[in-house]
Image 1 (tube, rainbow, N blue to C red):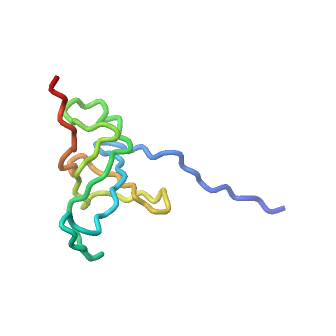
Image 2 (cartoon, rainbow, N blue to C red):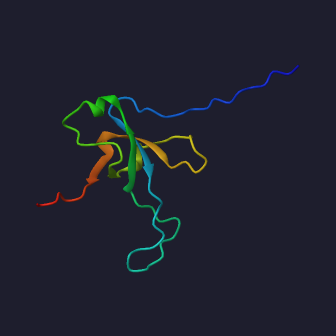
Image 3 (cartoon, rainbow, N blue to C red):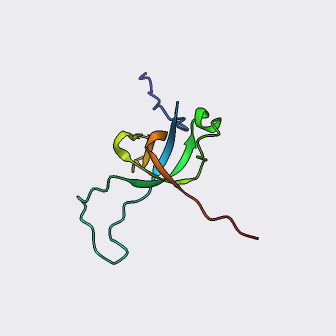
Length: 108
């Protein structure tokens, strides 16, 4: 009787150290003015949404990042995670997070 091999099925990815796990936004195919961008157009900074943060970042009051924040990050040191077929997940060092998009607080 042949033994069946079970695939390693991961349930989640937890970043270690000063890193966050980001789901990269879909690349824009055209500008707001309607100009189509070629597939080879390389933009050095990209956006995404934080899926999870490391415990180190969660406990650091000096780093204003939270789960589900939309961020702008430099992809040079981002590590792709081969976790999904369309592979939009990246582990990003906090130093490469350039900005956080936030809504202005209501002035009531």
